[in-house]
Image (tube, rainbow, N blue to C red; front, top):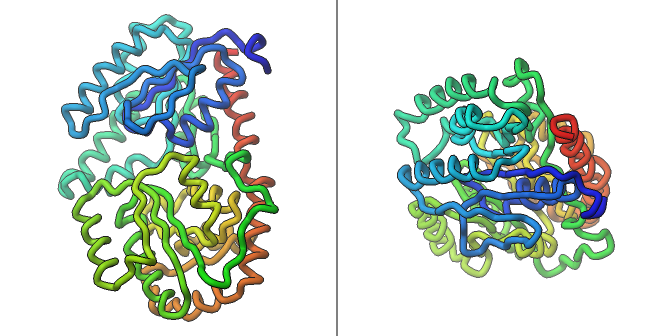
Length: 385
């Protein structure tokens, strides 16, 4: 569909927490919506490493941390919400879910609200490290109450995982848009470097937190380097300075400075360039409900770029690995007991190369964003034409 043939509708995508170049919001959904609709607005926090695009109209929010700045962002979002007069307001954060619907009374009847749910928010809130432990369950229950009050005002729910459906059975309009891989960001089959005689490269991409298994991954790399020459590339922000110091102390104490690199946040293009040079992707998530009932985006990105995946032994992940053999599932809390099997696994380079090629094929065949883009545009078409 050319720009002249696009439907003349104004779409406003809103997030108060995500990065301007968030993969799901920006590179997947906004890029897909641009193919059909003539005018896309994006309300988002302004960050130094944001990469805007000319055909998306950015409206910036402050990027400060803490409750005061969060409240100020909500106030400014409310202002933008009323100023833009969009046909659709597509928002992505739980705090917006309990705030924006009340502004419906100030909108024209034609304006539609879409709530894009990325994770199991009640469970996620109950495990937030920055919240005092005594308040986590309280905040989680408050969110559930407010969300229940807000849902009748929302015209379409978009769920990033089929597993969330059971929480929203009462809503009349639900679309499941999975976080599958962008084919153009995946590696061409012929280009995967499998010259592994000298070094085996591991990679992790995402928020660097204890609950995402970084501690267990560091222990794995320590053990592996007693037998193999391994490198571990950790790509993602570390918001907890205390945890960052513990990681650095572990690296220094075990003399792994030449083996482990912390990159911090990298934009999607730079992160994928590093991923494409690696051999094994790490997904050592802890057994939290929010993690266990999802198939994480990074699994598909690793597969699409020819990585063998080493992940937690969650039942759904074990079953998926049994069906398509994407790598190895591990009891991450018993790395020492698992290490012999892991040694055997990474020693079999022919098997790793076979899985690598199979992962690239399966990512394109079963986990491609192309199929999800069609579902997204169909859901929008049913809502506004």
